[in-house]
Amino acid sequence: MKRITSKILSVAALTGFMLGASSCQEDLLEQAPTTELGTNAFWKTEADATFALMGAYSSIRPLFDRDYYLDGHGEYVRTRGTSATNENLRLGDAYHNGNYNPSGYAGSFDKMYRYLYGGVNRANYVIDNVNIMLQTASPSSVENLEAIVGEARLLRGMVYFRLISMWGDVPYISNIVNANAEVADITRMPIAQVKDSIMADFTYAYEKLPVKGAAIGRAGKPAALAFRGKLQLYWACWNKFGWPELETFKSDPAAADAAYAAAAEDFRKVIQDFGLTLFRGGEPGEIDELGKAEKLPNYYYLFTPIANGNPEMIMTFTHGGVGTAQGEELMRDVAGRSHEGSQCWVSPRYEIADRYQSTITGDFMEPMIPMNPSANPAARTTPNSAVNPQSYANRDYRMKSSIMWDYEMSIGMIGLQSTGWVPFIYQTWNQPVTINGVRYTSYNTDGSNSGYVFRKFLRNYAGQGRSDGDYDFPVMRLADVYLMYAEATNEINGPQADAIELVNKIRHRGNLPPLKADKTASKQAFFDAIEQERIIELLGEGHRGFDLRRWRAIERVWGGPLTEGVWRIDTRGAQQQRYYQNASERVYEQAYIFRIPPGERDRNPNLTQNRPWM
Image (cartoon, rainbow, N blue to C red; front, side, top):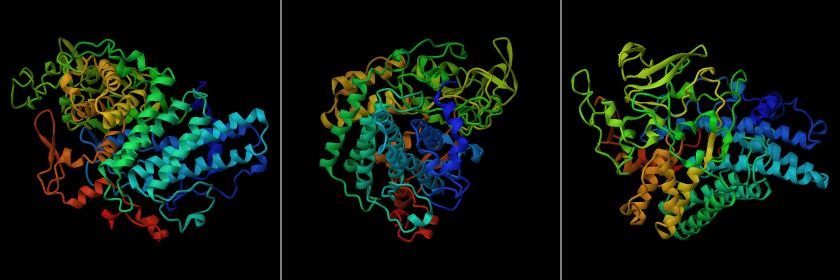
């Protein structure tokens, strides 16, 4: 394997040796051990600097590569928990102990806060030491060393971007911390200043990185520019919609307009200047008939290892695969027991089905009708019934690529061997069934309570264990850039022809016709079309919760304070969970900003708390 993963694997031991143990459970930062390798024995060559950078990638990867859990903060994905991992191999798992429900979640991410700061320290370790090397570097080494600093600064910027998106004002640390005493009295920096520092990191990275990353999984100029645009888009949203829960922040409409414009310009350059294209040209590809899965649309394959290294994947985190102890956990988290004993921690909610539009009209179809086949013998044949497979005909190709409903097939696998096709039939787990004269054993999963499971991220072939995937998880895709560009330009000037064309390109991969005139007739109508595509295109990739918060749209989805809330149901009409029932205004406020960890405040009295958590 000549990908970056081989380098990550080779530096794992050195990373822990130089950069600190991950078992520290009490400190803000992961402290460096007293036996660390001295700089006089390292940091001599470009190879040393690259070696350490790979350690930073390896350490920061676990802060982003399971963002699909975070989709539980929206309305279309249920995350019922997280799978266990080996902390010594993953250098800790920031996602553990988090709350991934649509409400009440923002007081449960103390661990992520701590590990994000560990990521900052590891990026700083590379930045500081390579900057020292640059002081005496030969002219022939300067460009490569500056590019290494650029990659590390991009990683640091990504981590701080995550921190401010969740907590607002945060302490800013720009140098190596060797002991917690060095930051024991640090204060929170206003978000505007942290944002400016992140911008500086992304700008430096853009200026110094090569157009194309040095290896799969390593960043190039488009990644730095895309993240800079995304930061400016978020800054624009916070200034337009406000962030009243962050008391030090005052929204400014003029700042919003300027940030939208700057974001649009960065996204425009990403789209036009680097020759990037959608996976397989954005073509829909083939689709099998209902109940079969031998031919799946191109969108499905975008989320399998076939897409590793594809130009649509602007920024990814790589994984080692079988036998490396650094495989991704995607199948374990989205699939059921029929797939190498997977646990189905993450599944689509029932309500996502109605978001998939008609390939004939290009618009929404009549809502599904939940029906219980145990109580209604006609449920399987009633038109538009949620348990009638024919109700799913002629819909956006991304539906079959992303979710499975009753009688949809996937390849079962146990002990790295295929067990053949297994049909998903809700609440019929691991049972013999006969379909069209062929006997099968039904999909064995009790993790779904909606009537659907994910096909997205599910491997349709045997040979890899549930935790041995080698898929490069995307943290920045070209399709996302298209949609962010459309959003930013729409805010400035309303629907623009080039933005409409880009949205239609994304729709085309679902074999949908272009947007009708009424969908682009006004700023609000086009925003609704953009949001629709974000829901479908980015399902399960960790974006929805952040979108709802930056748009201040939580009340729009769940109702305002002291209302009845909203039930989540299943395909059979059973009520599963109700969210925000009689919720107070404080509950909504707490959903918009995360709690500064009390343990950190106990150790550092200078850390203030966000108002809704006081």
